[in-house]
Length: 157
Length: 444
Image (cartoon, rainbow over all chains, first blue to last red; front, side):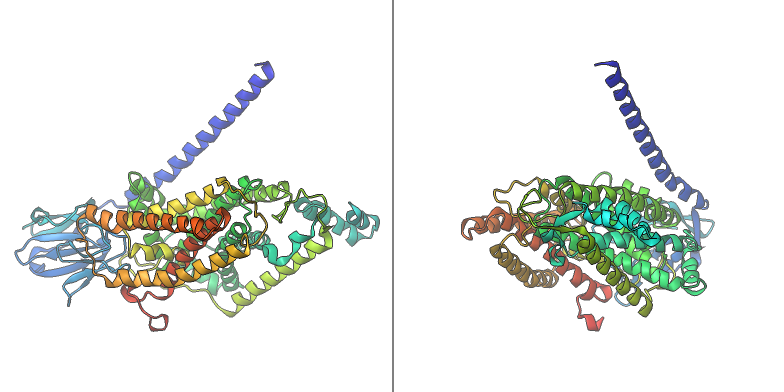
């Protein structure tokens, strides 16, 4: 290798390194979006209402937090995410048929979030429900993924 | 050889000198002075590449205008679109043009792909250009898709929510990728900013660079594909000016006139402001992704949204690496036999796909939905391998019994895949109503 080709190689490698650096920089800028988004959710505990107002057997929409609060007849509460587990559309509660229906691909879920009709692959995500001083709150920070409903998903006052 | 440019040069009146400068620097930069007569017939290439280049320029100009008013934030985006439509002089017209031309670009880039495949122009010496072309195709689709979100109405919000959710099914990196692209759990402010940057920066810049490369490679391959190739010395040639330049000019004017006419007659849609809590019923992906969404109604999402599109793109790229015994480059549909086969296959798909869709709709789901692995096998693996097996049988039958050569078979498979997608897409667009139930288009 003579001096000229050696220097040429060095130039090429400097170019490659610069390219990789820029790519890395672009990625770090792109990924930083997530952090920017998180900072806006400063209050993660959302108060849904007072415990005595939330009646057993009822389903309450809470569109601000994109969730449904379900209180079952035995008093157990479940905060179901509004997002269909198939492709993220917002499900809506159908009172007459006693089920959640997704308008995008007609997946259906029962009031425990379990899938009644595919294509949804698993039960609706849930949020942690906290009952404190007679107030029912939902922790929006922690979305819980699950295969299917378990008795332990319910929160009792 | 150089009669024409000299003629322009010799007469030194002002406008002619100017015309000469344009001619030598622009036209002769793109085209050679003389080109094979066969290559300028309109129905040989349909001028699709040129139309796309023109539309790209049109999108750049209208896009720059729209950027003066548009504000990429969830609070302001929708209002700025309203402002473009109501307050800005000719704003609605410019938005109409941008929207219409963007849609047309997706259609034309698809036709361009068909033209190149059906004239076997994807083979060497055009291998590099085919690969660039496929990347450009993807860039055009992604440009359209990233622009889809910007109006921030119910249509754009849910189309992008549905389409980006498909990423979630990509194993290992899918969820992370989705979080990065969306900039969070849901489609929101960061998503809009990301899409705006992709739509008005990264994608157009990449397209400009690759487009220049694409043109240069066309010239390097000796022009567009023609039977016998450009190397043939005896081939009849004509002057590029006026023969080709005049044709291009006419095509450009007609295309522009059509777009302007459509844009002045009909306003492009703008639905209500995006509402994350309320999915419209039905919520549909952008029209060109509706084939995938239709597939999602029948197959496990990993197969419908990830594996099948991925395999399709891979096979597009690898098409150019196939080795054919016979060279049919430049001949439409390879041969009369190939043409007949392709027609038959397209017709059969037109009947077969709706029947399959109906069957899958009527047969009750055997799968207990909550068991993920079983759904993956029954709605994914089994139909997928059954499809591959039947496909292999069909190809064997074509080559053994039908005596088709490889050119015709490859073209046949391509026609099968493309027409299946188109049928699925049109079912998704027109035959799916409330709750994505099947229905007639006029009952929706």
